[in-house]
Image: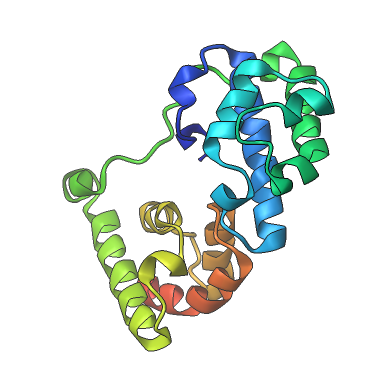
Length: 191
């Protein structure tokens, strides 16, 4: 998911991509701790500027565009540690410019490529719609769309609330989202 950082096309070298990845995961951890949207913790634009500048001091981090605010400056050590971690990474572990071919096909092609997955996606989306109405929470807040697609494409071998929860967590769902949705989605997949 870090490869979908807005503006990543500007980062051309593997070391810069490593900085994007490292900062993206640091931001995600901080957002989870604060239970806040990642973009509110640190905008994508600051991650990209950090990848391009590769700051090596706290002062250099604080001088980045978009970092002057109170929240950005307060977490400057976190961002510097993320940058330093990427700079220290061995060459062999650096991400490549091109993403490996493990992405899912567009959902409008699922019925041709994997009809079973298309049926599961329909069932999961219907279960989420019912849950959304019952809880008065928008569907898009219940689960990240990528987690829903991944669950439908490749469900756990033994479907249960626990195994569905594991898949959701592995694909970016927060703990409260798993608690609210796992039972209903397990029932939808089992049906």
